[in-house]
Image 1 (cartoon, rainbow, N blue to C red):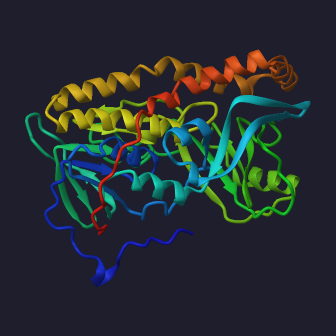
Image 2: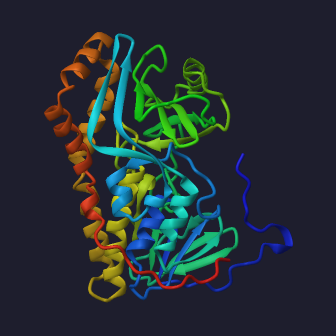
Image 3: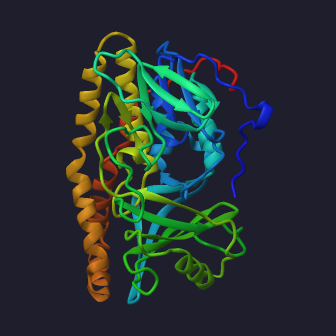
Length: 386
């Protein structure tokens, strides 16, 4: 169980009168990407999260290597995985990808990413936001350490969409969410150089299992597109089949449909905007992709080159412009589990040609391409975290 490092009792002091130029709520992939894009802008950027930076991982922590390299995060890589394998009840295929995955250390990656920013950081739990009246200069965000006001606010807090005032809170299992759980045993035997996937109804009715080698450990888990289906028992069975220990459980919900990327003057990034890609459940690369886009719009507003309303409209359109790719992936998410296993096995084998693999996985990467990263920013010295 994660233990919060935030001060308690008498040590838990109020934040005081905080009025940053940009307030970023959430200090994982999306929030830190927003802060990275604002580096060197001169804006007073405050990042807040209930946990310390890098303290609480919630995913298998693997991303396309070209993205990690473009973001300058190579030092967090634990193992590069140039292959993917897919197993059904009727056989297996192994693809050499046109690009590779890399597993990484979550804490190290977040620390490296924060080091690229000149933002301030404090630990605080975001509780809610006051509805924003047209013409108001500042948003009002309430935390367990006091109230923060800022003209530019980002919600990168995850699928709960905490800063939404307009939408009713839709909780699992009724929300458009998938669920996943994994174990993190230390390596006791070789696990190869592939990101392995299992698509078997006997394992999980609508979803898939995975194994991600990560240096001295391996990450074995199961994800379900149907949030009503439990994933612990399938995770245990897959780990037992592979000869891995069932230790260090980690799980989370993750979205599989786009949501509005702006609302009531607030920018939403990552899981709070449904940016996790359907079918694969990949949310790290897309959190970077949309976080950087939001950060660049905020940078223009702070510089006086764009009105806040125009920046919101541009970012909303940018996110919505990915709708077709997300709809295709969501259709595949519904189709793949419905295919008869023998048909799915045949499809996977037909795809097993270099040109077809390059075309399919090239399309997948281009929906959030690493070329979008741009030049690495030059951070100034950080202020002391509170």
